[in-house]
Length: 376
Image (cartoon, rainbow, N blue to C red; front, side, top):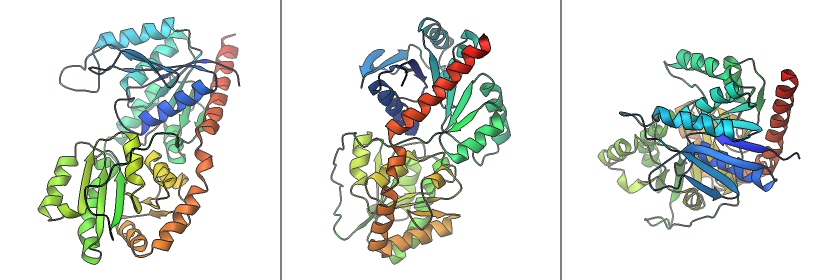
């Protein structure tokens, strides 16, 4: 494998917690272990060093405060600094992560201007939103600057091909089983309980409100259920209030934002994993649940459909009623939970980061070669 100097760029990186953050670091770390010189370029946070080495990866944080009145966009000087980092960095390939990342999009445009080969990894779906046409339009405008796109699932691949005629490569994200697991005892008696875990940012897009909505009917039949809601987000306080108003506080536990090691520790204590998001681009949390032998119930026709085979390695529901019915089947049948989880775990080798790193490096090689060939 030819060694390269690689820049992975996105706003979405630690200490922020989420799927892109984990995926980008896992890729950076794996590339570094294979001998590549890897830098992650991302935004700065208070009390976080502007430069450090983490797992063999150089982490460079752009100085810059958010533009007044919002948190997503930084002040213009930050993007100017990014441009000069790329200009003087001697990077052979730039890999931007997330079409919703202002730093990533800025790096995409800057790389095109500087003649640096650039790949975009698309981690998201446009989804069911009235803003869909506008989002596709912006995607088309930005992806004109890319040499290739990596899509993390079949659903994202389809979305990406709507936005660009450039090469689109479907390469799944992976699961890193080497992370330290932080075992945290749950603050309630688990004896005789069935624990249904959800790991997601608490937003409407993730469908977490649907867990609260279907809980009363499930609890009428099964009083021993505990819904373990792992993650944080703008809906969290509203959901906690709704649970309290329904008199279900004893059956719900909201963890708030927790580090990945603690997420894995919680999942080890779960009996079922439930994610009712119909716009899930891939589902790293799904792989994490599978790695802990927890059977999965998710929604069909999303990125999860690449991971789960319905009725064989988990359940994929076409609507919320079916989702609830699938949960009931697993609540009532512990042996079914075991068999689905075991079947799913047999496919985990497909999501090994070493394998994924090799696939991505082939894309880098092709993009670099074609960029050089076309320029000559």
